[in-house]
Length: 194
Image (tube, rainbow, N blue to C red):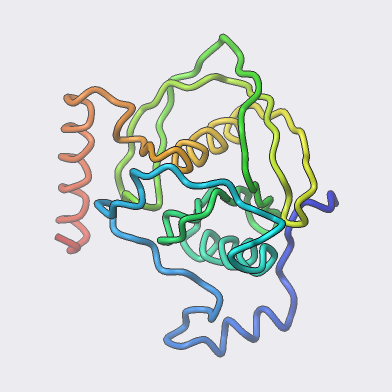
């Protein structure tokens, strides 16, 4: 296993979750509502020389929050935290990306559906480069390089947009957004949430 993958699936962690209030683990953040102003702000660089909090604890809490919501990615600002960091992964293997950037993107693009934990039940089709080369710092502050394709490339780009104050609703035409919102509203009514 790569040392930049954060794996938190210990008996202690499970017990902590079981002991959490109302079944919510102690180290899980609440998500901000979709109209919160932090979602449209550019996040400042994370300063490892003078960190605003412990990077490992932040990464761990973001992972647990993402897992609890069954997401593939989660940015700190989606939790109301003004930090340039997001996590991405699946099941027990997540990576924390501090100060991420894309250094190269393929010319070939793919148009496919995306969702977002900040916009529950809203699926929108977004066009993005199929492959990307990236740099980032891990939770120890070490610089890393990676290449992503497929769903990993899409997730990285979606979360990096969050770091730049861009939500996926900004990337679709108004008619497509209206249609997506109508579908979401129907679904919310159907399940009794609206």
